[in-house]
Amino acid sequence: MLRAHRLAPAVATAVLAAAALATAGTAHAAPASTSAAHTRAALDATCSQAYLPLPDPACTPGATNPDVTQDTIDSTICVPGYSTSIRPSTSYTNRLKVQQIAQYGYEDTSTADYEEDHFIPLSLGGHPTDPHNLWPEPHYATGPSGQGSTDKDAVEYKLYRAVCNHQVDLVPAQQAIVTDWTTALSVLGLG
Image (cartoon, rainbow, N blue to C red; front, side, top):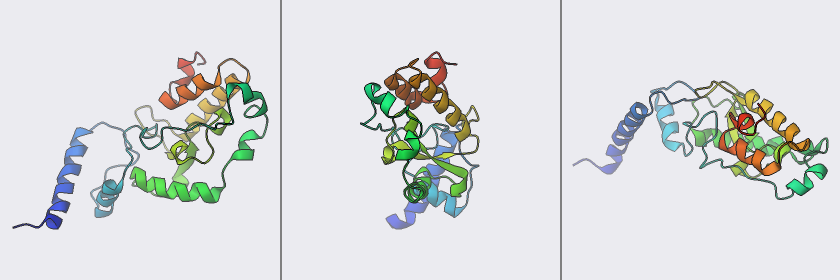
């Protein structure tokens, strides 16, 4: 009779193989590997790469800063230097980045290849330290559109300018970036 602990690796391998077949064509941050370390990382992953270039909404739904509202934008986010003044320390974000790279099961574990990104940017009233608003966004191209962190940064800046110029209200800008930052500008009639 086979013991459960002997069956677990075989079952895990079968589940991973079935998942790989089921997700063929889905964007992944790094090429698939059959190494034992990669299999272990995939088993330990609690967040999915299937949404890239967006984060897994279950792991990173976004979180807002309660101090930033439509009524306070002119004294918070639209003041030069605001984002810098509330940005968390790199010791906090680097520690979180390492943890979240493992949670996302990225094969590439070099922290230099990721930006610990505020999903709702600080410049749009995102919470500075809530882990639900931070994730390891790949610098390299991901997803079907082949976009990376610099592409999101450009969208964030255009949304920030539109909010501070009172072309778009804060909450719709936040909702657009969380729903799909790759379409946020067009959804809001900005691009």
